[in-house]
Image (cartoon, rainbow, N blue to C red; front, top):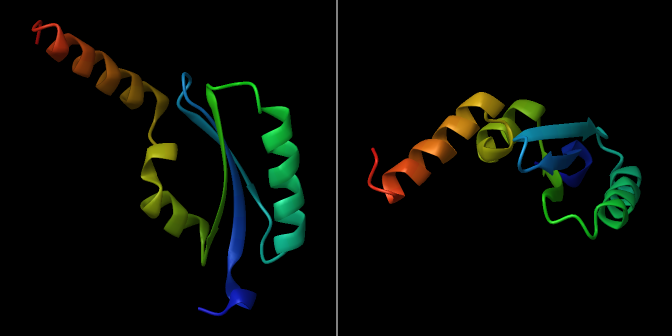
Length: 91
């Protein structure tokens, strides 16, 4: 895949809510990089937010390769509760 075919996606992931806000930039790397810098500055002090810039041939591909950002919020919460119960020996 050549650099000209790589599509860029800015992901701002709210960890407690298990929600990803994804902004596509198609092949405009400069615009994606600028938006990434802005998002990093905006969320610099917030440890509950992850900001990543991903490149791939499609949105579907990043959903597969970075699936933790795209899990359903309810499922994610259920997994966390189950893990915590298991640690406490209650499950």
